Image 1 (cartoon, rainbow, N blue to C red):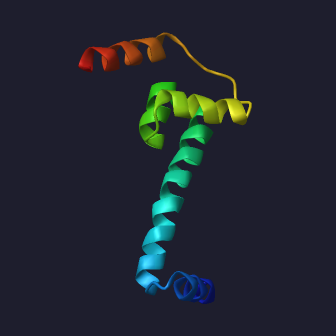
Image 2: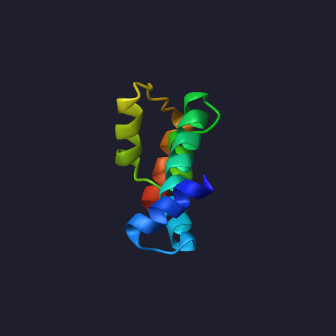
Length: 89
């Protein structure tokens, strides 16, 4: 892995720490999305909580769920959560 980071640094003309920061900036949001989807799919969290965990908009998350063919689990708890969020606007 160190060799790959060095190769990227050479190609991008960056120092290794900058390369690592760039890679983490891409990897962390991806991990958050996958984790939120996993919990949502297992019905451990609501759609609203998955939106929070993923740091995406509800529409962006719904698009990812649709692409992965994950059914929507929307219940009264989700409705209450969404209504509270609307009140905050």
